[in-house]
Every structure is written in C-alpha cells, then in structure tokens.
Length: 587
Image (cartoon, rainbow, N blue to C red; front, side, top):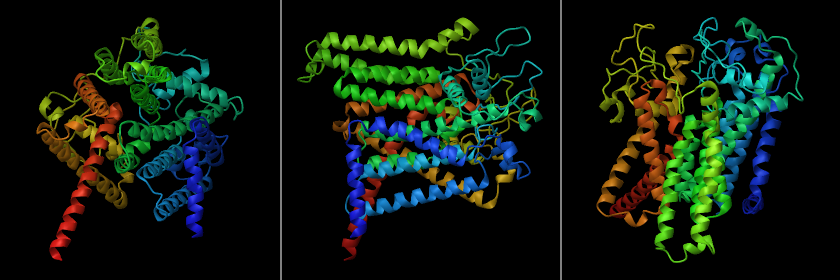
C-alpha cells in the first residue's frame, strides 16, 4: 500500500505539471540545463580526447567522448538506474490503475531521449566515424582542388571569423561549393556561436592538438574543447525532437494504444536514436518541420494568430537549416487551400465565426503574415548565396557518373523504384554503397552495390550508412547475431505494414473506413504523398546510394508508423478474438 500511495502522489504531481499552461517554458530550458550539467559532470575535459586516452586502446582515443573511463561508467550506471526507476514507476501505475496509452507514450519519449543522449555523449564530436558529411581535418587532399570541407569546416570557419570567410575556391579562383558549403547555414551558425558563447568561460590553451598536428592541420586545444561542448546543444535538440514526435502523433489523432505503439516504434528505431549524433543539419531541420506541422493542425483547429505565426517561423527556420524542409510547405499549403474553400462555401455552421467579425479579411491577413515571415526566413540563405557565391538556387552536390557511389542505368528504373522487398536487401544486411573498381574504371556487378531506393531507406533506418566491410573488427559473433535479429524484426514489420496497407486500401475502395476520413487523415495523406514523390524525384535526379537514405524523408515515418500501429492494434484484437473463440470451442 505504501508503494501504491507513493506512486499515486508522484503521478498526481506529474499530472498537475502536465496540465499547467506554462509547462513548456519550464520544460524546454530545464532539459537544456540538465543536459549541460550532465555534460560537464561526465564528458568535459579541458584537453582533446585524443590526448586524454593517449596510450590506451585506439578506439577510445579516436572515438570516446567521456571525460575518462570512470566518468563514462558512472554515466552509464546513472542511465541504467534512471531506466529502472522509470520501469518501476510504470509498474506502479499499472497496479494503481493509472497507466494509460499516453503515459506509455511519455515513457517511450523518455527512452528515446536516453538512447539518443547516450550516443551523443559516448561519441566525441571530432571523430570521423558516426557522423554524416562531417569531414574532419583535411578529409580530402588539401593540396589540390578536390579539397571540400564538410560541416566541420563550415562551423570552424564561422567560429573563427564570425561569418563565412574561407569559402573554398578551385584553381581558377571560382567558388567551389561542393560538399557542404552550399548548404543553408542556420544550424552551422547556431553551433559556431554556441562555441563562441562557451568560449567566454573556457580556454584550454592555444597549442595545436596532437591529432590535428598528425593531419597537418592548425586546430587548437581550445577549439577542440569548444567543438565538443556543442554536444550540449545537439543532445538537447534530440530530446526536444523526441517530445515533439509524441505531440505531433497526438495532433494527428493517435490516442491511447495507437499513440503508445507508434511512439514505441520511434523509440526503438535505431536511426532516431542516432539522429542527433550524426552531427549534420537533419536533426534541427526535422525539429522545425515537426513544430510547423504541429502548429498547422493547431491552426486548423482554432485559426489563431499565434498558430499561423509559429507555422511560418518554424517552416522558415527549417528551410534556413536545410532547404528541403520546404517540401512540408506543400501539405501545409493544401490545408490552407482546404480551409479557404471551406470558408467561402460556409458548409459548416459557425465556421466563419472562428475568424470573429471579419472572417475573409482575417483569413487573408493571416496568409499575408505567413508569407511575410516564411519567405524572408526560408529563402534568405539561398538568395544570399546565389548573389555572393553564385550557388544555383536549390543546388545539391552532384557527384557525377564517375563517382564510386553512382547507380548506373545497369539497374533499370523498375527495380530501383517500384519493388519492395528488392533483391539487394539480401546482398547484405548492411549498406553496400560502392561499385567495384577504382576511379575512372568502375564496373557494375550484381550483388556488390545497393540500387533500390526503398532498400536504402530500410537499411539506413537500422544501420544509418554503416558499411561493415570497412570496420571488420566489429563483426564479432555477438554483434552479428544482434544485427541480424534487428534486421529480421524490422523486415517482418515492414512486410506486415505492406499487407495491412494493402488490406486497408481494398477495404476503403469497397466502401469501408470512409466515414473515418477526417481532415487530419487527409493531412496525413498529403504528408505521405509529398514525402514519397520528393524522395523518388530526388533519387531519380541524383542516382547515388547516399541519396537513398531515410534522413531525407523523416516525416514519412509518421504515416508509416501510424499505419503499423493501427495494424498491430487490429492484429492484437483479432488474435484475442480467435483465442477466446478457440477456448470456447475447447470448453
């Protein structure tokens, strides 16, 4: 009884906080403060980690991001205790009859936040592995025009100069904007100026780090330590994103069991655990698009001024972070058009009243305000970089047909785009990103390279871009058993989803489910079609294995996991029914 009373008191306080109007003004900065405390307690050292772990195992020296092995172990013990406490709390809620689907969803948010933070803390920033397009040191040969700095070089440039000063040039003096300098740079400025802020309190000396010297690169101890401090911001973005995933699931109409299952799928999807730690602009861009979609649905419910402004701010900042966030403007625009038609037709009594005394004028003023915010924010970097650096509008780095990751016409369009499962799913459970041969003499051979865009989506969801052929030391028996287990589980879930969606489509055509086709579901379909079409077009225009990656259509996971959650829920209902029927027959 004492245990149940203790659980009840905690739950009452949690519920009271959850109902408080201003909770997010405490929760959002509170998360940032907590992450900061944890980072300085377990990760901070006024010295590069390469030197912290000098003389120890090479993988610790090259990759480990904890202040010491002891600090790392202490942090992991704290994580285990936190998870145990959360599980005990959930058991207590179950025993007291207080456990709901929403609380399961919150529990999975907690787990996803824990998983993503552990990876961010465990892997140092200045490591070549685990990050996407990071390009540490002179990853390309800096003695010729093939030198193309990645995200690391862009952030370092802004940190040192306050803005972009060292935009790469080729031998002819033209701006060389391949790799990551062409990207919109809100994320890069955010991290660079966060480093500058931390630099007000941190100075680790101006000596060149040992690993930088080994790469003939000028990079000081202070710069290294400040780069590592950006993990506070990156881990916080990961936790905020976890919260917004649950909030958007609720806005899309997922409740109780469906909400819990969908959030559980997000929590145990490996790529969402890795998303903050890949250290590129995808994580922040995804957070902004989640916020934009959330406020779009909120505007549909209330037509408030603050909602329209927040849609514009978040969509604009998402585009300023990564330009392809702009594709989410399409379903949002479709929602605007739908509400415009509904307003003028006045099919629903009281609809015009939502805009108070002047419904038509208010609607158009909101659209004007939206445009006045989103276009300057979203297009600023694209226009500026076109005018200053002559970067084409909407430019994407094109590797060329001689690239080692080019998908040649040897693989026809049908097997690349139109089938799933595809044969290349069974070439290897890991990514096969490269053709055979050397530069200028690549050959296409069946079984050596992934070619199907949905295979790329599937594999990257589990293993990111991991190509285990490059890291044979990790291919131990326990690791491979775990990898195959995860692959098989996700494969079975993918097949189950396909079967359920096919069954649902047949039922819908037959006249079932149509009464359930709400505005939210139509909005979800708009997101689905937008993501699929943009992904297919992107891979058609840029036929490389690196473009067949789930990070380019992260919003697609919402309709995908909501469909799978519905399918699993219905499957549970049918299994329960048949089990009871079997028991009755046996009796």
